Length: 123
Image (cartoon, rainbow, N blue to C red; front, side, top):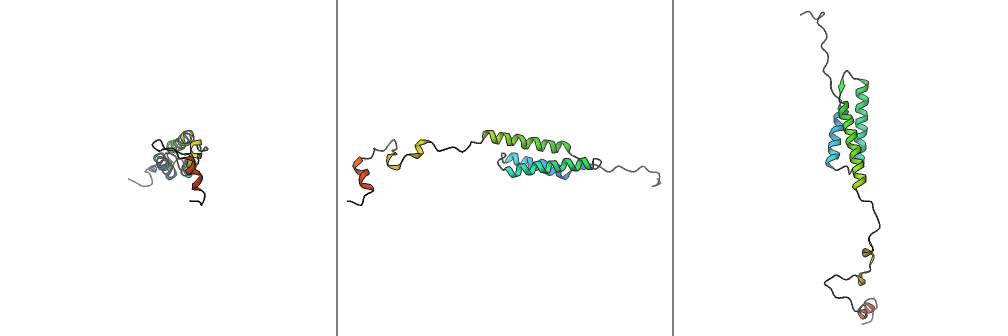
């Protein structure tokens, strides 16, 4: 009962705020399918800050697994996005056809005499 003889009560360790922010933001990036590259980079930075905070004060903070999980999740999302997202290419040749040559299946082909008179001012 004497305050001088009682052993000090250890403070309760809590999760690092950076680790919690990293895992929550990684889950948000997962919902957005990894499409926002700046968000993915922010997750990685927050996770690294969380690991740094935990390393500097291990008696105060926990959450190393959350940081590594966030980094892994963002890396997997980046790989999947890079593999599945189509790369921009040239349009197919059928998009390059002039309008007078493009004929829909239910239309009749244009008569050559009509094509020559469209551009001229003669009537």
